[in-house]
Length: 125
Image (cartoon, rainbow, N blue to C red; front, side, top):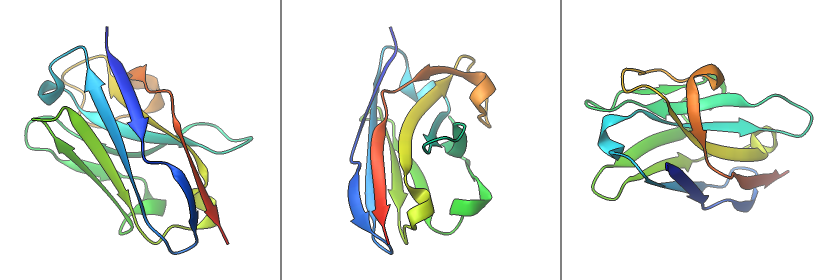
């Protein structure tokens, strides 16, 4: 049974930083792409970033490029999301996710097999 447990959310002022962590268990972590998604109140869940297995290529949605960095530590079975220069529009519940297939490199909501429980990020203006 795959489990994803997020931590690191909280309340921060605009321009501040947070680092989210997601600890994974239940399968060989290093062999799967890992990703972060977010969902703001009244909006659909959206892709934020993902990092592939193997060479760890990363992808970002345009609105976070240059501000967020995704990374992974395969020895710790953990994926991170460093969020800098946070804006009020980044306020959302952030979810860790992983796809069903090993071959998936770029993630979308459609190819997610497992979700974490989510962690709240609130950015005040």
